[in-house]
Amino acid sequence: MSEIHTGARYVEALSALPSDRLARSAFQDLVLRIARPGAALFDFGAGPGIDARFYAGFGFRVGAYDVDPGMCDFFSVHCGALIQAGQIELHTGTYPDFLASEAPAGATRADLVTSNFAPLNLIEDLRSLFLKFHALTAPDGKVLASVLSPYFLGDLRYRWWWSNCRQLWRKGHFAVPGAHGPIVRRRLADFAAQSAPYFALKRVFPGLPSIRERDAHGIDMSRRGSRAWLRLMNCRFMFLLFEKLRLEPPANETVHRLLIEKEHQHGHDPGNDERENDA
Ligand SMILES: C[S@@+](CC[C@H](N)C(=O)[O-])C[C@H]1O[C@@H](n2cnc3c(N)ncnc32)[C@H](O)[C@@H]1O
Image (cartoon, rainbow, N blue to C red):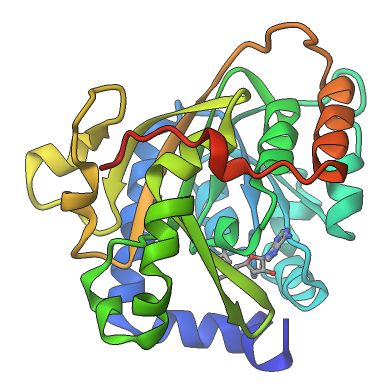
């Protein structure tokens, strides 16, 4: 990340807009509703540690990872006392190293992986990341991610949306250049396809504080024809809740990693096996 969007400058920018503050508090509230007291959380793309410190304040044990050294430097100071107390553990290093790292035997597995403010939109190969989440989590683990909604009406004023909407419909995703690499917007069906066979997309929540009762419970993605996207047009973010699946043989995560690498070498197009459950 560039100087301007990392560490203290990032915190300043992200705290300035009321809409961002509302989106953060909606996500944090949802985490508090989903995670049982004392649970182990893992914050992926943790940035400066705003959420990690918030979760630790509620008694959760928190693991965290961010690829950006500037963010990690800020995190280490912002959460310094909690890191020293052993309640927060920050992982640093390159993304390939993060994906390849093996948890030591007996290491705590996360009950819930969190990822707020769209780190997943910065990942092109999501399937490898969901494999990693599978390895990081306890048997009934979950992933809660705040991602950019490709259905957000506010984006229809931009030319990039119109020049990519056909691809969104046909392939399930499109990427636009961002300051730090491509920003990939995905349909719900594409997220569901990319998380398989490691996780299943179970519920989707509009990324704002819920005023209506039905928004608080989210949209059940196992119902066919839920037309979830219609309820996701008024907010920039959508919150996705995935539940861990038991791996069928070959059940070994190392074998899966090798399969993914092979898939990449042969240029598999993940759009081909996308499930059509969001339209
Ligand atoms: C918009 S910030 C969100 C930060 C934090 N989750 C929050 O709520 O403020 C996106 C974060 O994703 C991180 N990121 C981008 N690519 C990443 C990757 N491959 N692995 C881990 N983190 C990544 C960035 O460094 C940045 O801190």
